[in-house]
Length: 390
Image (cartoon, rainbow, N blue to C red; front, side, top):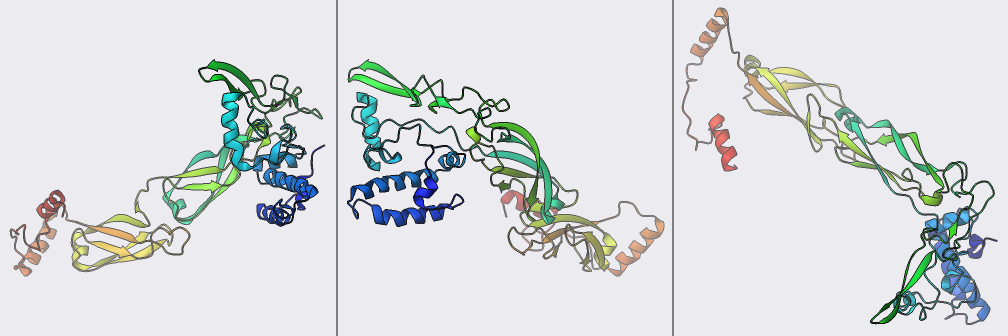
């Protein structure tokens, strides 16, 4: 019959790790051999310590919740059991392993390592999803398809068929490992390896579940909704706790990570929280000034005023119209790069008007500008700065 580990500590089955720790500390202060030398108290202290170790191990606790006893197959030696094997100090575990490896286990103090639990934690899973820049800016709830191992709905993770139960492995006798002895210059050396029959669990399932084949889990495809916060970017990952792979034996599921792949945008180029775009402005509008309607990602149409006398390569700034910053209310800016367009062809009337304009601006004559001049901002200057790293 499985032991009531929750009852030993005096906590409920839904107790949190903190509640279990507080209950253990309270009992340990009353029952520790340094405080209470009574033999009954020492026996009770062993039980409380073993219960604490079981309930703070997620895999062992799941076995308890499924009605099993994670220490039953191990024989209950040392601090892990309730039998009369004596209390084994934690600091002697590594020394015992050394003696066991070289001298066949004669110097160990609490029995062998024991079988490992059939219930193991599941692995994390990674899934990638494509998002548009608009979805990254506004946030979105995305439905994705996940193909992972889930808990078997027939056996609920036990791996057995109907009311059948696992039985002790005959190959290893329930120890979970098989030993072999070899001769060396040190004498007889005993080595141990996981049992090939039970794979280290110490038990086998003679009548496995018809659906999962004894694994306690099956693969299934399911749809889940992922809430993507505003401001995510390319390569960022969203963690969904407990949505990954269910472990062997129906163990607790790992986490699912959804990695964002941001798609290129037709207008905007993202640089962190800022956005960059290019607006082509006719020469006359750049000289006289005008306004342009720009469709932003979040705020919709925004009027951009272009000042009279705007020069080629000027950059206008729309503050607070860029990408949201994660977990804050702040937002980046939109950098509008203005490209002044000179007409390639003009008709006769247009040419006459331009000549009249040139006559009115007779002081504006072509000139050669020194590359050392601070006004030297032409193409050659920009090329020079690019090569010299200025």
